[in-house]
Image (tube, rainbow, N blue to C red; front, top):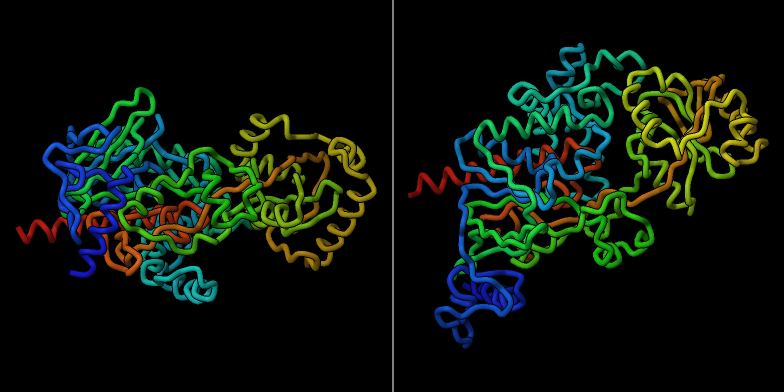
Length: 501
């Protein structure tokens, strides 16, 4: 009873602010503790009365990899599924991603002779994760981890998603724990488009240009739908839904939130303009609460896909002064270190091994598409240093030291292990700048991904996945796994409710 009264009082304030809209009249059912209920027909000034024009079993807000993955189980179980996105295209920021998916034991890996047991891998990974102290629910994280493999197998077998054959890179020294899309790094169309097409073929509806603005609740304060507005014409659409999954991504582009939760990164530019934290703020309006919001956002280069080339080929990265500063085989280390050191930019030097290697499609794509940030080919280090505008003596000293580590078989400076090899002329170099990328803080959820309030009580009918949840990982596959967690949970809930009727 106390929880119900507290929730009604909370919702009364949220409704009065316009954050939450009530079907029927504005404040019906919120007249506890001496307040007076609104009369029939009362409404909030400036808000159009609710009129449900569409209805669905499962409403998913956001069409990135988390939202698309969340739709799979409900639509395959025969439920009516609608996905909505504020943009005029599906895929969210997943289309911009490098496409690196850390997965164990998938069929794609097994076909290449690479064995792996997700459960065994989890047992090794769990203590590391627990030690970091960034996860409150290890059971949830375990499910996310294990479902990554299921997701990879299902999208390939049932939806026609394409992964790059591991034979292309399994014997080159690149990590075989990684799955890549289609033609390699950056080719997310090969994964996302088949999933979208498959969901639509199975009956899901995808609505674009729909920005979620308000939860809609009934007279008891239970969420029953969502209000959307079309940003192209301001048309309002109210959708009634039995279950809602929030998959709207992170908040790295919301300067107010970034300044509040990790102000030391507030001066960093965001890599995109879409991660505004709308899902975070919407869920707070119905009593949701945050966790781990002070976790720094990942930093990434403005050439995000180029940053991960170190997993697949040799390169040397240097400061604007031409001095090596990082282990080049870890994708986020370069921008993180650049940010910490206050570097406005850094250089990544490479040669024909990457140009002709397993990721040649992506290398060519970025060299053509970012020619203004590329120098080379250069036949000597002196020529390269001049093109990069760095002191030639520094650059030559850097390579002399690096080549010595190669000869010794050990990088004593930074511990590089992948592709510890000498570069050969002609040389090329890309100029990178550090940007704020992916936030990790998010909404507290139960193990089944249902949104909870500050006391840990479930908020009925609302689930969260992907980067709306705390520490959803740094690559695509955990976001996909978290989507499956939510999708399976709403199917179980709908089936239980159906059995009870």
